[in-house]
Image 1 (tube, helix red, strand yellow):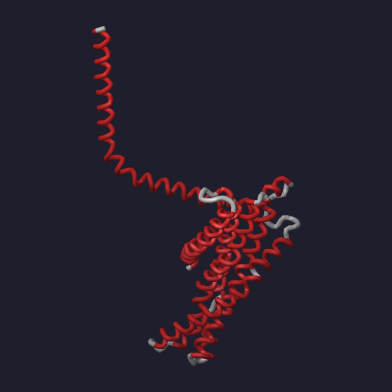
Image 2 (image 1 turned 135 degrees about the vertical axis):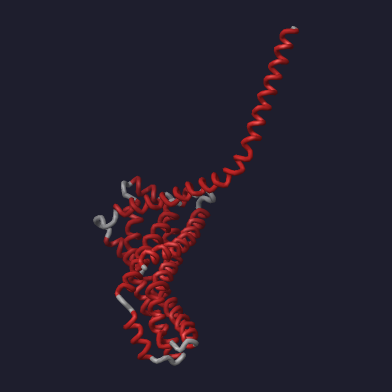
Length: 294
């Protein structure tokens, strides 16, 4: 009995000693953890961001492989009508008043330096190189992009996409590829319309209302504009088309996998996320593309 008690006492002492060693080790590692915790958080966020970026990229790649397959022309035409033709009125309205505001502000700024003759050049270059592609993409994302996300999201939660799989119809080929193709076709055309209507709006504001010289305005537009300016604007429009169509289709296609909601709530959250992410990526990519084109 005495031997057992002694052994038990030794074991208890060893256990307490081990615990003290563990506590001492934890205490020694505590400053190290305090130093590494911010870097670990940044690393986890970076890995999560790369994963969130990689999934839409793979989604776009798989959808692009199914582009221009047989019997898709009619669906592409339908989507061009939906994305492009039905967005014309809002694009014309926004572009006209954007040109008017730009002409008004530019005229009063140029008058201070006696350079009101450069009004046409300033309005045209600002619209063609920057405001035209960006505002067109944002307006289409708000009007057509949100509708695309909601439509595909409802098809997902109502199991219509699963029914396509059951009938051996590729959902990417049937739903996604026509929309991406139609966006690539529609965005440059609507951007060109935005530029033309915006320049007319600047003419109305600067010439007809404020009294700038009409011939100087038109001459400056013709003399300043180069083909590179128009090409750069169209390149931006194509980049924005790929971004908006991919983000909106992706958010709707995977609406059922959201962790913050399900059913109709998931569709609403996906629609909101699609518009917000599209607008943010438009502005970010605008800077990147501009830095590469200049």
